[in-house]
Amino acid sequence: MSFSPASIKSKLPRVGTTIFTTMSTLAQEVGAVNLGQGFPDFDCDPRLLDMLNAAARAGHNQYPPMAGVLALRQAVADKVNELYDASYDPVNEITITAGATQAIQTALTAIVHPGDEVIIFEPVYDSYDPVIRMNGGTPIYARLPFPDFRPDFAALRALITPKTRAIIINTPHNPTATLWSRDELNQLALILRDTNIVLISDEVYEHMVFDGVRHQSVTSIPDLAERAFVISSFGKTYHVTGWKIAYCLAARELMVEFRKAHQFIVFTVHTPSQHALANYMALRTHETLPEFYQAKRDYFLAQVAPTKLAWSRAPATYFALASYAHLDAYNQLSDVEFALKLARENGVVCIPLSAFYSNGEDNRVVRFCFAKKEQTLALAVDRLKTL
Ligand code: PMP
Ligand code: GLN
Image (tube, rainbow, N blue to C red; front, side, top):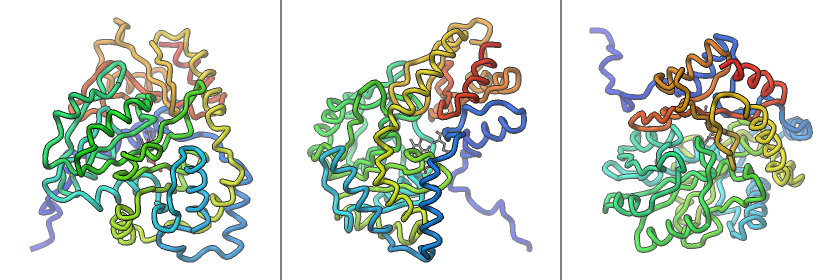
């Protein structure tokens, strides 16, 4: 008898290739401008590359400490303290991870047991649901109702059961580009106050908040911070998504459990990039990121205004939503059909919003990423005008 791969019972029977990979592949195949997957098409600061080179040349090429290079953890602690008035001990409460994706996976793996429920808000980033399931948990869907995408706290309260192990929030939010207000975080704190529910706060877009508004971090609300894993990504902040490097903050006892899982999932993270980022953080370039991306947002939204699509304002992140619900020539198409048509016939790739819903909810809205060079955006705009 030979081995039968079909004998493997899939842990993720309904999961295919992610929408981001699918749409980036399509962009290449049809030669479309790729405003789908969220990554910059411009390079990072050359000084960061010099620091990476210097770190490797200085011999930082073996395993770093399991929790990450201490100088980088210290730089993160200093930044978080300055921005959010929060105190995290770099030795015991900060861990460097191989991207936010790994941090989310590790936090869930550390705490979710079979039968546990984890509440997530849809539209939702695509990695949360499968990781909950791989750990034997059940994702429970709260909604951020279209078109404002504000959390509904009465509905959230009704979803909490004795089985609720954790809640995941994401602010600023992918894909809707909205952010939670301080009042909303305080309402969440009230709901969680007398529970043992863990909070996982995905804040990878913390430095992309526009129009003078400030990101409200879970780290700045003690009642939330004490029960939270807070995650951010150097990849997003420093234009190096391919480096896959991020960090997780958590109170000491939570971090003990996180590290138990971390050491067997990845053990450590690429050493030279950690040294490079530790040095680079001293240049404080995250302070200019809002201005940098706000200029891109303003340019993009001004240029696309004359197109037939209806655009939302994008107060944060590097994503903007566009609706075609009012266009009779297109609104019979599902958002997936529309995105495919736009790629093949108009030469621009976007992401259909239904990909972020468990039930395929389709409001005839698609997501565009404006983390691109001006010439890329200009080309995309020319093509979008052909709609
Ligand atoms: N969370 C959200 C909301 C994201 O949009 C992304 C990726 N773009 C990630 C996590 C993953 O970040 P990383 O690339 O650092 O794994
Ligand atoms: N987070 C990015 C996005 O939303 C892509 C990351 C990925 O491809 N997994 O487009």
